[in-house]
Length: 174
Image (cartoon, rainbow, N blue to C red):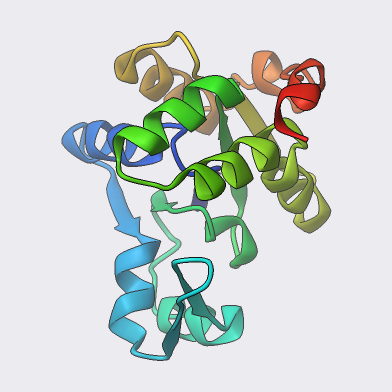
């Protein structure tokens, strides 16, 4: 089973992926795969790497889906997956985390607005009905990882999409 672990930058994907790896899961960093494909371009204006999703998928075609493999990255929900888990976080927290990482104000605001508008959740649910979301705002990495394991094991009712709603935050970010 391929699990897409996705979410807006700053939601905690990398920290959770490290914990899941420590628990014995095979975890693939989609950003590293993209860099290894050597088919990406830098968008200097937006300070991002751009890659054709079809090329990225070809780089992932050899993944063994007979076991649980977690593909971590904000593009993972664009790839072929069996299940997607979207990590969510309050837009204020995302903006703060991204500024601490050195993102400029405009880039931090763009990502906070993306979270407030549910962009990644909508993209994931457009691709599949097997999508879950977790509000990570005040949760530990261990709790989030436990929740993902619960979802993988079929105990997913608490994480059906639609329970996390940041629309009340939109005025701050528009």
